[in-house]
Length: 284
Image (cartoon, rainbow, N blue to C red; front, side, top):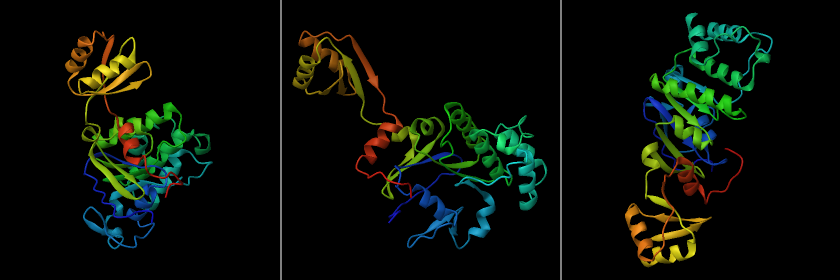
């Protein structure tokens, strides 16, 4: 079963990260939301309307990039969008606005086949913006991009969220997600593992990195003082929110530290903790 008892709630406005190891059910969930796959049980709603039954009534408010889009390689990016706009009945001004939003102004006259992978991905997103969607679903939009391309997509997604578009972003690049998302859901084996504001997900017990001349005696001194410490390379990681206790315990043992630095949890560490027991496989 690709998705089992998954409760996914995406708040309106901002960027919501949808995270999970390969095979955890991210793409399957997105396909069910878009009516491309059918759930055997449970229910889905978009804008409060049941899916797939009422999908025709709300699909016009949704834009999605789930698979590689098909554009005519010999036509310019702008021409491709104008043809699509004519098909869906979008106003002529929508093309220029979409190109500007994704940062393709100045390159709109280039043939599609001459676009870089990042430009092709931006054009795909521009195509979804023609109908001015309230919800934009992006499945791994930075796959295969170089660092510059990833940064461009990240800044564009952040801008869309700031403009009031709700963006559901499926990704495995945790550092990028933490920079752009206001909230996130983490799943594993098709089940919900955690969900909430990013700042709440990464909060937790404090830890400090301690550098001392000899870690082993320092670890013993900290343990005697009731502090949980583990040797990490040339130093120690101490789980506490009271750094004064660390320096006091070491000083009592005549051990002088050379560094005491707070260690902040990030989304990647939370993700790895939650998904450590999940088997990796092909994304479903």
